[in-house]
Length: 109
Image (tube, one colour):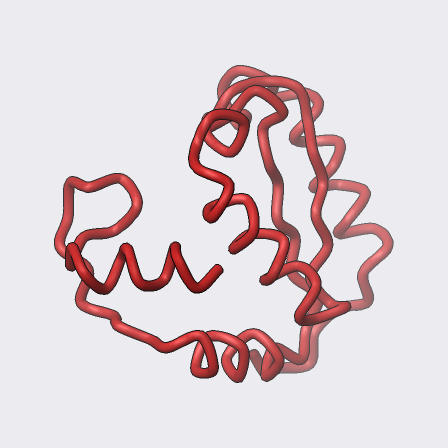
C-alpha cells in the first residue's frame, strides 16, 4: 500500500492518470479514515478488471482497505472494470444481496 500511496503523491495524479489528485493522505491518515467508517460499504471488483494487471502495490492497497475495516465487504464478479455495464445482472444481484442483508442506516459515515 505504501508504494501506491507514494506513487500517487509523487505524481499528483489519481490512478487513472487523467485528473490531478487534490487529496494527499499518508498511510496512517488512510487507515484512520477507513477505520472511521461506521456503516457497511460494498466494494465490487471485476475479476478481469484493472486489478488483474496493475502492479502488486495496487492490489495490496485494495487488500489493505478491505482488511482495515470489517464493515467493508468485497465481492468479485465476472468482467472487466465496468462490471455495472458488462456484467449488469451479476453486479445487480450482488448489490441487491448486500442491501437485503445490511440493516438500514440511521446516519453516520
